Length: 396
Image 1 (cartoon, rainbow, N blue to C red):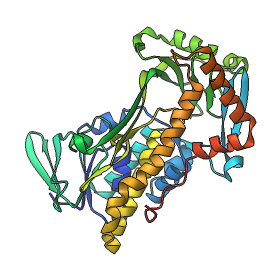
Image 2: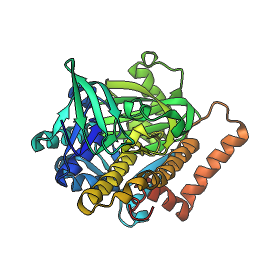
Image 3: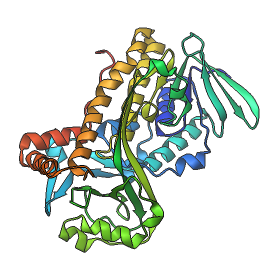
Image 4: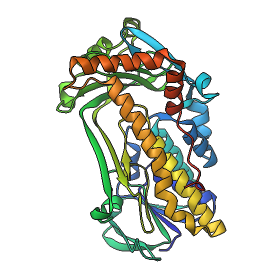
């Protein structure tokens, strides 16, 4: 097989890149080690920045999002029994976010790819990129026990933190930046109405909590737990009691509870590798960076990587601008580190750290109080939450 761009990974970043390239007339093949059903079964993020919403529109896959997604113009911070509203649109000149689950984004992109006739190979074993430093890179893999090869011009590694793309780059060429947090998020999905029309981020002496949603009838709630906790130790009743204890009384009183339809614990870490490219192999999304879910930046950062790579490749194929290829990593990393900073800051400000002394706790509380009491502070929160502008590919 031969194509212009070989994409490793059929998650939302790989599918979105493939869709954008296809619309631009750039041929691509996606290779995924899991089944399509497995990929769709992942329960992940649901807050889309304005930039990602616009990118999905550009890709021609926004119809269902526009019809079923929930536009949000603000969110709440709850602490000390207070509820402080952050007016995103008012503070950013009209920008907001869209509540639309990652599973639904993936479903829409899968449908568009199937309709386009572009090739996606699922359940591919032993996927390996080769010749990344040459002018003729290629992928090898096995499908149903038969060895296969894809010759291409470029390879996009959209296969996540545990994927083969980053692992195929010599370790001594990568610089790793990492912070592992001593806690995780215990999350449940339930068919109950949301307790609030907007997301609520709560800081409490017992730990962080988040009230989110997927639709007017489906909710996603989280509570901070220690890194050693097990899901099986958290029956639904215990979860609901703990969540209510961390929320302002008026929210706790009106919360509708019900049986969970999914329950899991997500560890929290910050992770970045530099550079994000090796010859003609480009790392995209979780293959190159992880952020704590506080602030909802993970999927959105992957989308900005996709936008950068897509726009560079479009210039390469239509204008011969091969000089832009070597700028990919620097362009992406500027925005990534700003999002890493915001996610780290939100995590540090809203969570209870096990080794935190009384002085640190008071500083943490005072910083939160300062930001919500200041117009400049609220604006900083808002402009980071809706997402900083995508970097220009010409300015690196």
